[in-house]
Amino acid sequence: MKRLYVHRSFKDEFITALVEYAKQQKVGNGLDEDVVVGPVQNKMQFDKVRGLLDDIRSNSYKVVLGGEVDDGSNGYFVPVTIIDNPPETARIVQEEQFSPLIPVLAYYEIDEVIERANASEYGLGGSVWGRDTQQAIAVANRLETGTVWVNEIHNVSVDMPFGGHKQSGLGVEHGEEGLMLFTNPKVIAIKK
Image 1 (cartoon, rainbow, N blue to C red):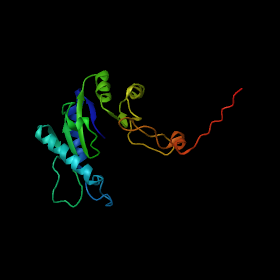
Image 2: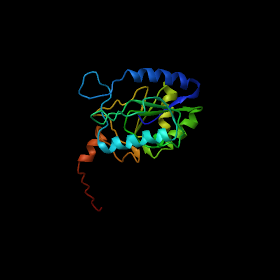
Image 3: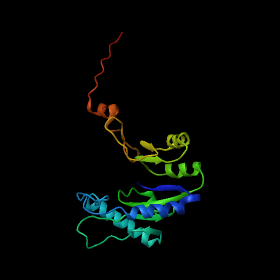
Image 4: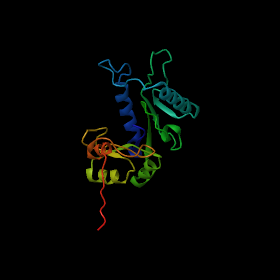
């Protein structure tokens, strides 16, 4: 998850619950049965994540969990890190971190949060959660992403197209649309 928008009326309560949940998620070797969060995939990405953590510290953003990489660990392990309401211009909000760093951002109105979410140059996926499913679907229809899940996240299957918008990709994999990428259509045009 790249960033998480939560209505201002319950953001603090949400962060408290998220921190308690995140504390239960063990970071370590992904082959160990009780590990939930494995290492960052490669050194280049690990270095990028460390740069994001340095930026968070140098700008004094409020870190409510994590934030420090154990230099003594053998691997690209990053602790689950939750950042409370950094500015929209922060690197942690604007860049795709592909790591267990998550900024939690407060919003007031639906139109405002949709505008903020769409202001990104990326658009791989999104998720909308709410008690009113029809309203959540209406919000999902306005998000500029390749996939939007409603009241779930990262439910991907081979029969459902998956791909991004904007800088997150062109085209899709999976589903009939993805299979079409592996075909060679032929057109025969006949003059009448």
